[in-house]
Length: 374
Image 1 (cartoon, rainbow, N blue to C red):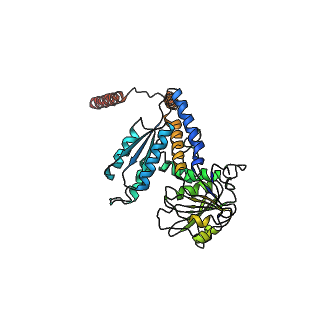
Image 2 (cartoon, rainbow, N blue to C red):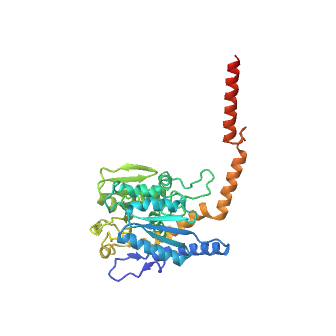
Image 3 (cartoon, helix red, strand yellow):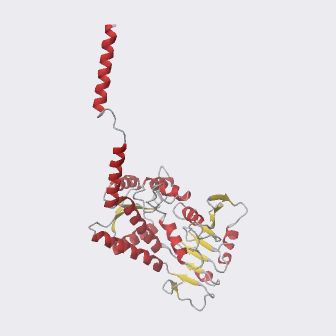
């Protein structure tokens, strides 16, 4: 682990314990994005436009929106925040953004209907996630991308396989952080086995973080315990198993990686559950662990925040969507393909609908005339 990523260990930390600043993990991804934006400008192509929709007063959502805006401005991406006073208008605003050819990416800052009384309840947020066009979904949370993730399908254009899927950006940020940590990922192994032999516990099963992250790490070969309020499941080898005999403590104690994402300041993971040589990632906006206590555990690696890497993955997803669907060269390819497909289709004997109607009418008149003669 390089010194720029790791906070210098105070003398009261356990031997080998380290705290990692995720900012430096985000840095190379953002540098790559700046290079891509510069290349677009040199080719006379305007930078992609990301639209954010904010319709709540959640402090974490507002902070995320601010981070997104600052990062986009710094990296040359166009960003437009659209604040919506009444949550009932979010769907219309979302559909307007979907249909706007100037918009290349959309992010909705949740929760929305989880905070206010509504006919649909919290499930309305799920409906909104599925309403985002897969061509603009920088969060990777719509049905198209979730379905592909849970089936370990990595492209949206099978069998051509030229357009990689977008992955949920917060879960992806955890993967990139783990890839940079010692002993978590083994890239010498084949794809799908990089985390083979690792046991992971994720405390959270939301559709935004916990569930997609569990699937992603399992797709990379890990055994993943997904812990929520009233149940524990094991993701292994593309299958899901109920774990009636396990407890949160038993899962954490056997894990080499622990990820916490409980969105409340009252939750604390008991430090005594964490074993030496464990990597601990705090995804929640609140600290789910006692930092001082876990840094007393030998060779523990602790990452307290993932927000800046999440924003970098958001930008990375935007660039992938732009090259998949919105780049002028890609749009030209799509037009040519449609023209080619149309040319291969058999030409119908009629020219248009009016000719069909005329032929039917003439046939009917002729039939009636012949019938009268008989």
